[in-house]
Length: 411
Image (cartoon, rainbow, N blue to C red):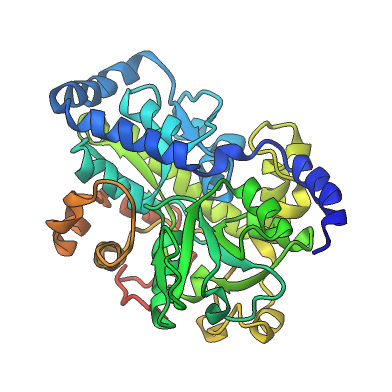
């Protein structure tokens, strides 16, 4: 793209709002690592904070924390449609955080009760710091893509180039590296001159868009609506949807303190009921969801335009995307992003296995001793989501099998 077009792109990006909150810079990554490292040294204090959180719940409304990405849609729609209130819950206006470190730190400190969190990061929090919290439901499935410069036509074209990821402990990094391995490419933090290397960098999504436009990166893999934004602005094209690589994979999950789950089961059930109800509503009202979440609505949920959100929530032309290679499994019959709450154990097991093969920076010693089957049972508490699913009509309303079991499909 000609540099003379960059001012126009910059203006369009500014219209998306201040979205530096939606990912992690290297500084953010180091900050979160520091937060988690400090937390690991204070297990007794953290346990007290977690236990105290359930007691303090009686004194204040439900507090929800989120980053303004489509991953947070169920938490926000449940608030907008008053589903929490229908469950008898008082709730504050959901609190927007500017980066993952601040969101996680507020959760650890007991300032926020419910958050959506990258599934690999949830694993990092529970086992890297031994903080007593669990995944209670999935927030959504798919909803991410590998977006590249117009001159990139296949994965091999990324050799010797730089690709941006939002965080080391993200499904984006896991799936990208899986794709690179299938083509004999090696992900590195610094290029050494070998022909098969691809440099990975941590970068906030708004920076990804402009970096792709000016040629400083060859592509990025990230959550929506930033892939949709690149398409709308003609900055790049989608090389592959992550859901077309790992069928119906989770990205963000609903994360709650274990003390709340054990000491206040009825309250916890109400929270999960509302979120599950919101997911079903979104599936049936995608354009209305875009209106609710868009900055034009005045709800102050996200800084994104309705047009970008509509594309992220609804546009998945398998014929057109199939021709450019972004969709190679049209027979999977998926949506660009979808919403179903059940946290399949098979997914968690596969995630642990893949994380052990994935290049990340930071202290990852805790990964070495993790057993996939143990993590699937220990990290996830599905008691509440099972009841919530039955309350809205059973697994079938989400297109799920009655057995709530599956085999993972990883292309």
